[in-house]
Amino acid sequence: MTKEELYERLNEVFRDVFDDEDIVVTATTTSDDIEDWDSLEHINLVNAVEKEFGVKFTMAQVTGMKDVGEMVDIILATKNQ
Image (cartoon, rainbow, N blue to C red; front, side, top):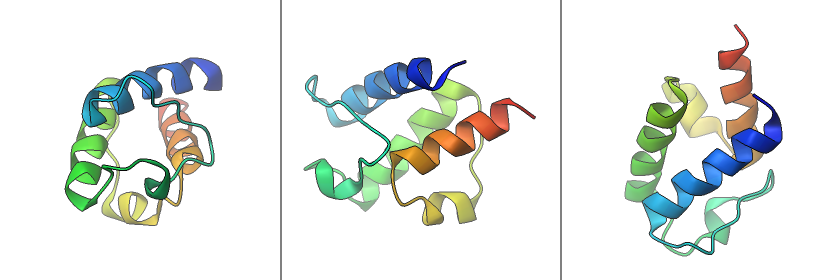
């Protein structure tokens, strides 16, 4: 899977979780960039991403992600093991 494909799939997950078809995530997207991204929605988002990509984030990864780019890096690293 390429990064471009991963971002396309992530866009669909974000749009579904936040019920906003206009969301386009990039490597630098953070919770500050999406209006409804609060702590509860973060949990829903993490669960949706894990389900979509068949990965399981550790608690350290979940709490340490600073932006979507870090999430992408973790997914790619997990899928390439």
